[in-house]
Image (tube, helix red, strand yellow):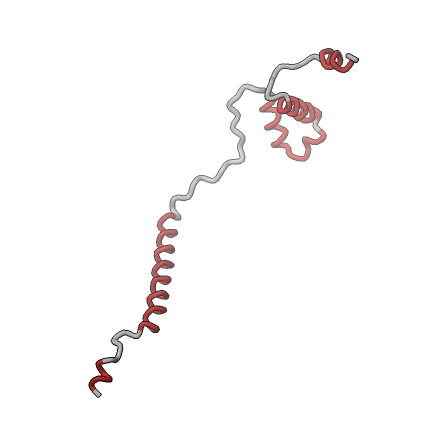
Length: 111
């Protein structure tokens, strides 16, 4: 009989392994909760909707005004002009110089 008792396992690993796994999961969740509670006081300032314009470009100010008035800008002639100028600058590579209409027509007239 003594030999049977001596061969018996001291730790039943089929039971201990899942218990250790669950315990580590609970510890990880508690650490995560404390982390988020500790860092929740460091919230960044919410972004403002105000547009900060640093340039003296009148077009930028007009585009900002058109953005601020929303859907009414569709019927505003100043906004339509500003959008056309903005598209022209965008497609010309940001150039602010204006090309005369005669220069465009000279290229089109050539055979």
